Length: 95
Image (cartoon, rainbow, N blue to C red; front, top):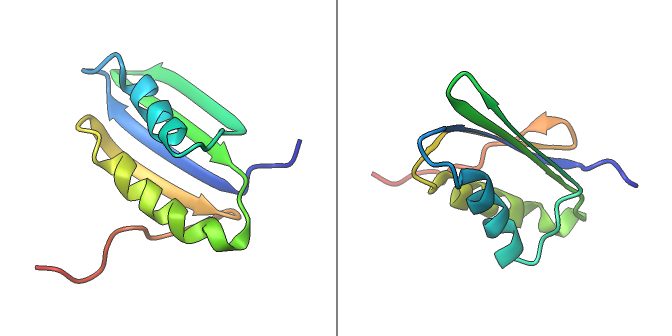
């Protein structure tokens, strides 16, 4: 199995026991099957790692997907790495 080259790392509050399902639902709605999924409860927070393998043209969609994941109300932090390098995914500009 190839190593996932895109990794979404989320830390969410444990207030919503359905947050792992909500995260997977966002991937499922886009017909993306994660190659790696880890969810653990640590000191009142849910830590979720989702790894996928994509081709070069899909990396822009990964940034959009990261922004969508941040819309989950209980997400406290979100980190996106592509090929081991941290990637900014926030929209630039705006007021």
